[in-house]
Each structure stands twice: as C-alpha cells, then as structure tokens.
Image 1: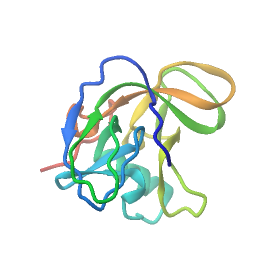
Image 2: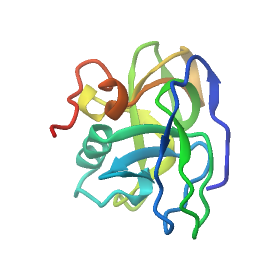
Image 3: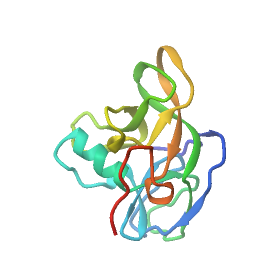
Image 4: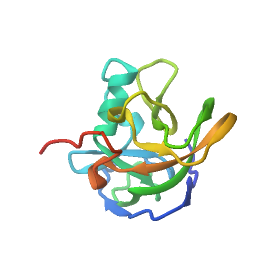
Length: 161
C-alpha cells in the first residue's frame, strides 16, 4: 500500500516507536506493538479466523503510522494513538459510535493495513465511527483509541504484562 495521510482532526497524542529494519510501514497503516517494535496489521500471524485476527490485533493496537519506514531502515516512526482518521471500508452505512476494527484480506488469512469494517464486540475494535454515513459509503471517519497507550475502546481488554 502507498502512503496516505488519513488524519483528519483531533489530538493525535503521538508516540515514537521502534521499527525492525525488515519491516515496511506506510503512512496511514494500522500498527500493532509486537514485543518492542511497531508492525503493520498485515504482519500479524494468522489466528485462524477473522474474529480471532481482529481480536488479537485490537489487543496490541498501537495506533496509525504518521511516518513511513522503508525496508532496510530502522529509524523509529511517529504513531498517532488517538484522533479521527478516514479509512477505506466496505460499502455500508455507518452510525455514530459504531465499533470498527481492521478488515481482513479476501483469502481470510491476513489483516489489511489501511481498511476497517464494522465489528460486533469491543474486543475486536480499534475505534468508533465519528461521522454518520446514512448512505452506503466506501470511507468512514474513525475515532481511534490505542489499546497499548490509552487502554483502547471502552469495553475492550488491554494486554496483561
């Protein structure tokens, strides 16, 4: 995926996260914290189902990449841990406060780095819809909440140390 600045408004409460030199991150990627470094959603190991993949990701959701990291680079990147971001999504209607989490690829074995969809439980969510879309739309504004830095979406569970 190419860089796409997805931030629209609100405090981003950024952190600077380490990146392994083999990890490729684009601006706008959804990131998880894997031990001590940031990785895009697609780097997460398959958990066997979409729900399990979404729940695992939400548990370690760090935020949205505000800087890129090319292959071979290990320079830390700035990550937004809160704020309202515009993401691609399946064509649907969206109501304020609905829960969203990362989408999965067509093969059902990898999360997508820059696409979200409605989810059924807060344990799968990375944020809530921030602008109502009463007509089917392919983009949605999402108020994100990093699980790692803010405890996540109300009702979700932060990882145990």
